[in-house]
Amino acid sequence: MESEPAATPRESELLAENDRLRRICNALIERVESSGAASGAPYTAFEHTVLLAEQVRERTETLHHTLDELGQVNTQLRDEISSRVNIEERLREAKQDAETANLSKTKFLAAVSHDLLQPLNAARLFTSALADHEVPEASRTLVGQISRSLKDVETLLGTLVDISRLDAGVLKPDIAPFAAGELLDALAEEYHQVAASQGLTLHYVPCNVVIDSDLQLLARVVRNFLTNAIRYTRHGRVLLGCRRRPQGLEIIVGDTGPGIDAGQREAIFQEFRRADTRDEGRERGLGLGLAIVDRIATMLSHPLTLHSVPGHGSSFSVLVPYGQLAAEPVTRAPSGTLPVDERLAGIRVWVIDNDPTILDGMQALLGGWGCQVVTAVSLDALSRATEDQDAIGADLLIVDYHLDQPGPNGLSVAQKLCETWPSLSVLLVTANHDAAITARSRELGYGCLLKPVKPLRLKMQLLNLLER
Image 1 (cartoon, rainbow, N blue to C red):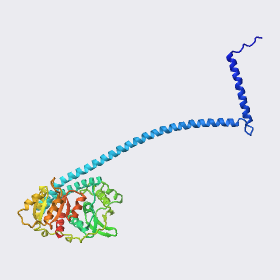
Image 2 (image 1 turned 120 degrees about the vertical axis):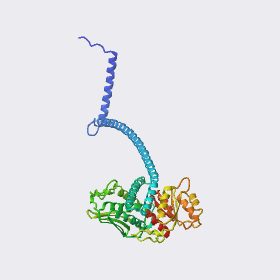
Image 3 (image 1 turned 180 degrees about the vertical axis):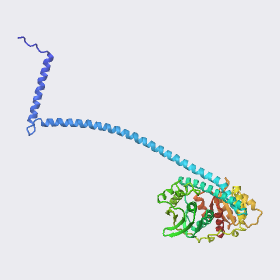
């Protein structure tokens, strides 16, 4: 037999290393078997250790993977938060831009309304003066139609401005105590004529309870009630009256019109929504009146109430808190009759307005009532116009708030004249609805009317000032 080839040095080295490792392995096995568990399973502890090590490795890998995912989520969250911050910043900027634009729109409308109200005020004064003159019956009818058209323009313009000011939040109430009759008597006199022109009867129950509200804004509410009642009532009557409630005075306007279905009673207080009366014989409004009423009542915290029976009529009411005057209210003219012009005959009246057309209208209207009128565009012009007269002065001053600038406003002019003529009664006339102006007028003891001036309201204000 042939002998096996001799191992190479490398093979001998590997065999020797293999023997050495085998001896080490046998020694380890003997040590494990000698220290094995009592149960006799020598490899149990070793296998358990290996299993735990594998579990630790797997869980460590899982943890690292989870941390990586959390890092990615955190990065996404940071990006999303940054994006939302940018969006919120843009929204704040857009909101500020919208508010600025809304305020600019409001200021623009206020300025435009003032410019529009000047000629409208003059036109109302001229038509009222013309109505007091003896004119042919056909012409009197035309005068009445002109007056109604001017009133419609006034209503539309006032509605536009009111909606804008309410939306912008710049219309602030001027809350003060006053006798309810101060408001309701003038409205009753005005709407007696309106109702009669539509073949209706207005029944008014006077009330002089003192209430606490903004006279001009409350007048807007009741005026809308009366306008709607007359507009939608074809036959019968309209009622204006009050009820004393524990929480305040309830001012009510009722009618014998078609009534309002239950399903429409909330909708009619929304913009551009009107009751469906199926009556095409009468002119209908834009559907903004009750929307303004609702906003004004909410701002004044005066609850509104609507009661209606379809086919039998409706009643709208507003609840106004009671107030208390510092002094006894002035004696008022009896309701149902116009104050007699003789009470104004011979009364000396100064009128200051920077619009010559307004002055001409005031001259015609007041002159028709028998007043002695001096008109002027400024305080200096009034001084020149009266320098040749005696030192008696005047009984009444009617002054516009917005005079030529630069220069004093109407309140400053009135105060200066009252320093010389302490007994001078003052009526401020303005197209500015700012509550601060009316509040300041009241503090000074002046009357205040908003343009366009209603002749009946002007007459009653003058009589009240004279009675003070």
